Structures are given as structure tokens and as C-alpha cells.
Image (tube, rainbow, N blue to C red):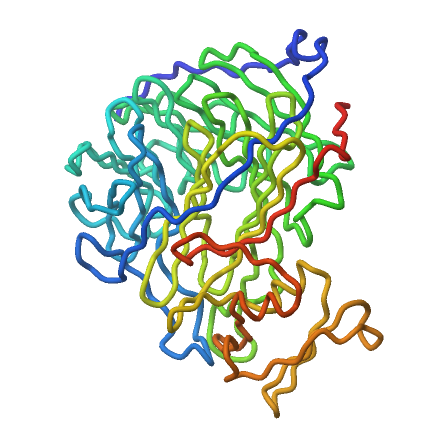
Amino acid sequence: MKTRLLWMPACLVVCAAACAAAPPAAEAQGYAPEELFSLEVGQADQQLGIWVSPNPEKPEGPAEGPIDLAIGADGSVYIADRMNHCVKRFDQQGNFIMRTQGDLENINYIAVDRDTGSVYALGGAGANILCKFAADGGLLWQLDLREEGGQLWGGGGALSTGPGGVICIEQRGDTIGRLAVLDAEGHFLGVREGRACTPTGRVLSFAPVPGEKLSVQVYVSDFQGRALGAYQTLPVPARFSLFQGVEGRPSYESLDDADYLYLRALGTSPYRVQLSPGPAGLTIASDIIVTRYDPSGRPVAHMRFPGSPYHFGDPVTVDGAGNIYHLTYEENRVHVIRYRLGGGAEGLQVIREMPTMAARGRVYVPLRLVAEHQGMKLRWSPKSRQVSVSAGKAGRGVPLGRFRVGDAGVRLHYGRVWVSSAVCRELGIALKTDKKRQVAYLQRFAGRRVVLTPR
């Protein structure tokens, strides 16, 4: 394929206007969790593929299912159905609209062109096959990234779209940040510095901040390489942070139409999901943490999504209006949850979503996650199948309750104790759920007492 090099490296500088003006007072727009829809597991058009270990007491490995999703201009939801080797589109009520033609195995990333509805998908054994599909799902072209004369690498990372059908592919494992840029016909335009492009014509680059693991320097430019501004993201105050056990620096998640930035980090979960059989098998233990920053770099919303027991990959995305979408699944259903951006609350909003399991008309959450969030201690007796909950330090804590597996609202699943919201109430914990009882979460607001000052 003939290439055209239209991109020149550009040195991004700090926007003088952004640095000179004092940023306004931080305000948080409250997020309201709601389940948009859920789908059964299967191979039909209106279902999604997923594999779960047949023995939940001795899991053979993590669940395998959709690990990426994207939101269209009309709010429709595109899901990378990697078990059925296609991308499926649904409206916000869960009605099936289309599926892409052909088989693309191991779909890792997807993106949607806001103007045309075209779908990009990156898959293949080495994340090296890039496909473009029309809005009706028909295959338009397919490109092997390894056949570009060495100008593209052997495998790509996250996809993002720019104006005019431009597609940007992040280089995996690159600490500086490089993007391969292709036009709407799949012609290679060149490589430039950056982590992602946006439909509004912006290119984002990040740089580490010495001594600040959880802060990054953000540079914004246009598609011609002209600097539009720069700022440093401020850390979330420690008393409201969900960053316990962070693995690596934050990475790009999204930039909405109001230029609010969403950074994602991985945090160690207290649960380890086994990747291979046997006592010495490989394990994974990462949650997904998303922080929303205003255009001056101050955090206004901070969320943590569970990476276990079922979640695997990065099934979180943001639309242009700033709504956050999260995909989660269990043995026989896949749930699409929207955190709808509302208005109104001052201070920093902190939300921790809980993995849920529905059984006999109740919703259950892992007791250990709830206890960790509230600073409680647990003691488990395998012989009696009983768990004791206390407040304060281990051995000197105040007893709060004892629960036995098999009691009302207490279940053992995937080797851990799950409890209902009624059991949480006995412990003095208000576990919030939506009216469909598919979403469970704990939330706090920083309120007026927290003052976030710019550096």
C-alpha cells in the first residue's frame, strides 16, 4: 500500500492563556448509575458470547467475553463480541441493530466514526488486523499492520477517531506516546506523538511528572501539530482516593466534547482471578479506576470499577456528553451500565461499583469488597463456613456480626462470600442499587470542606 507522510513531529508548549488565568472553583456533576439493558449469553444476534469456568468453586481461569465497547453519535452501544468474532450494535433499550460481517478473531479494540457510523475493529492473534465496517456492518477494508513496510508495528493498541474519518492507533508499550494515523480509506498518513485523537480535532499527549505517580502532564494540540494548551492533573485527595494498589501510571481513557479529561488506572483488587489451572497458575487482580478532570486538571469525579470475579479487559468508555459506560457480565447475562452525568453537587464525587450476582430475586455483592471499603475486618472459618465481621484493628475490633453460608442473604460463590443488601444494612452500610437491582455501588461526596487548589 502506498503511503503518504503528512505528519511532522511538533513540540507542544504550554498555552500561556491557560497558565495565566486562575481556574474557576471546582464543581462536580453528580453521576447517576443505571442499567441500560442486559443480554443473554449465546451466539444469536441479540445475545453476546462469553465463556465462564464450569466450576465456580474451582475456576479454571477468568471469564472471557467482551472487553471493549463504544458509543455512537445517537447513543447506540457497540460491543466487541470477541467470542462470536464480530461487533454488535444495540440501541439504549438493548434492541439489536446490526452485527459486522465476517469473522475477526480476538477483537481487542473498537471505535465508531461519529459522522458516518463506520466501525473500526482491531483484532487478530497479535492485535495486528484492522478492519473497517460500514454502518450496516458490511466489510469495507481490512489491513494487516505488519505489512506496512515497517512503518507500523506488529500490533496496535487502543483506537480513536478524528474528523473526516481519520483513525488513530496507539502504539502499545511505548512510554513516550505514538500514534499511527490512517485516513478513511486505510492509507497510512504517518506516525506522530500522542496517545489519542478526538472527533473534535484534538490530539492528546501525556508526560510523566517526576515524583508524582498519579499525576500526568497533559498536552493538547490540533491535527496540524499546533499547541492548544497544557496542564498537570492534580491528585485526588488521599481521604477520597480509590487508588489503593495502583499498577503503573494513568493512561488515556477519553476527552468529551467539553474538554473534560478521563484518565484510567489499574488498581489491585483484593481478589485474584486465576488465569491458568493449578496452584501455581498465573493470576490477574486489576480493577479499573477512572478519574474525570476539568479543563484545568482538577478531579471532579472518581470511580472504581471491579476487575473481578468476571471482568477482564477494559470495558469502560465515555461518550461526548461525558456519560460513562461500563460493561459487566456473569455466567448467563451481560449488563451495560451507564453512569449518567447529571448536575449539581459541589465537591469531588467518589463512586465504587460493586460486582453483583443475581440469585432468587436478590442482588449479592462480595462481602470482602464492602468490608474493605468501610475499613472492616473479616475472619473466615472454612470448617463452620462462617464469617465474622468486626470494626477496627484485627484482634481488637468491635464485633459487628456473624454470618453463615446458607443463611438468608449469604452465599458462597467463586470461593468467596457474597451478601445481599439486607445483610449490608445489618452492618450499618447503605448499599445503593438501581430500581432493576442490577447495579450496586457505594458513593461519597467531598463536599464544601475539600478545597482543590491549582499548582
